[in-house]
Length: 102
Image (cartoon, rainbow, N blue to C red; front, side):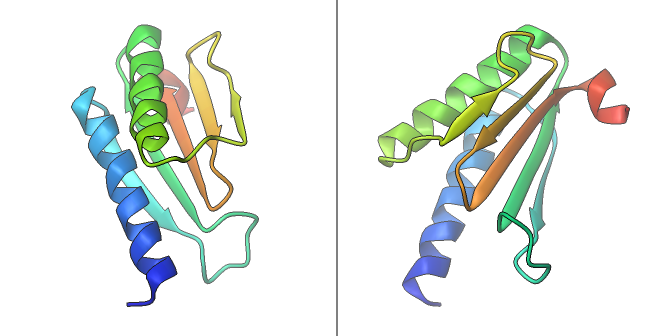
């Protein structure tokens, strides 16, 4: 496995681990590398409340900061119904259950 693939795999694992630490539900990793999108991976999960969604986001950000990674952009944190965390090659989507169903 090339170093970039290994590094990406480790980052994906950190995000999934962080989300699960805060009891995220239905965590999915979507590989978009073969589709030529603006990012390589989507990680999608949801929480039961806006506070839990924010806690999941906080934990993901904390874990990735420990790995010296900072998000390019975070959107939706204030409302907590859908948070998008843009790490360029990886985009994390954290929803409330209702918003994810929509």
